Length: 464
Ligand code: URQ
Ligand code: ZN
Ligand code: ZN
Image (tube, rainbow, N blue to C red; front, top):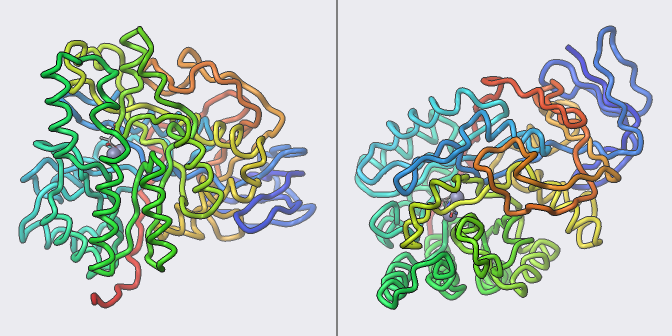
């Protein structure tokens, strides 16, 4: 089975150039001018379009059991929605319950992911600590292609990692050549501010951002950076939402520390005025953590991407429907935290980033695909259009337009934080593992076609 993508401009993180792309099986076999199509090949006309590496979303939660319920998108519907938006690989999360053996949780998630339509791989969360957790981290790195371990510094009385767990886990990650990642919010401060607000009778979605101000995120970002610095580990901070956290990353990087930052498409576009909306479903639909911030923070995050202090864009795709969000109608702390975005990430970042001149097409590829591939050690298999790389490609029509709406999306949950946004620049075709899985609005995702992607450990470095 061959696919020839003809007449386009290939855009990689380093350069853009006119070339055809020939895929055979699940690999790119040739990139160059005037390639000939083998008999029976599917031909994609990419004239006037960009041919880019398939998007990598390094932060999703398909089929997540959370806050007493389970997300609307499972691994099939979530990855299929990603394919429709040009994202061909997701990095999801195994999140063991406290005291749950890591390997038991890992195999549970692997089972759920077998229905995926696109490629996937997992960060594993460290939500508790024991000698067995220490051992299991080694097994996951050596035998299961895990090279990143997540730590929730928020969600007290649930999955929050305290400082002892952070220090022991970061140290273990270093021994194993794996990278620690964090959800940086001070869970104790969130909890106390939540109780304060409830005591004052402030129970609606508007209280959500009041219980998690930027300073609560920045404290945790600074603390994680300090721990990583003392232990000499790299650090990846997920969903950096505010200027204060970005400034902490910028300071650390300027001092030579290896810290990476992730920005969510939602946090780059949506501001906290959504919480003022009188309709509960609308405001609750935007409840996620960290919350959407006031407008100056979006400006700072874009500058972070432009300046190289934020490295990847993600979505934290974690969809709940209105009925599920209504669990918190009388108590905002019970609104399941999470929003969608896996289907729209690339289009909104192109529309807001490239069309405005903030990002070049190559910088767009860097922050939607190549950087995530390099940071999590699957480059150049992923994140590059070149012979030998996986045939994961998005043909991007810079003149194409669409209006984003929950009414027309493939993702589940019936809500979209980008509702009504007209975007210019959209995928015309997505190729995953060499097969056309999306073409001009027609989704051809196949349940179970996605593969688990092993991510090798980095060369272990000596602890200080
Ligand atoms: O915190 C996360 O990343 C997960 C639980 C999704 N929910 C959210 O509000 N971000
Ligand atoms: Zn998080
Ligand atoms: Zn998340």
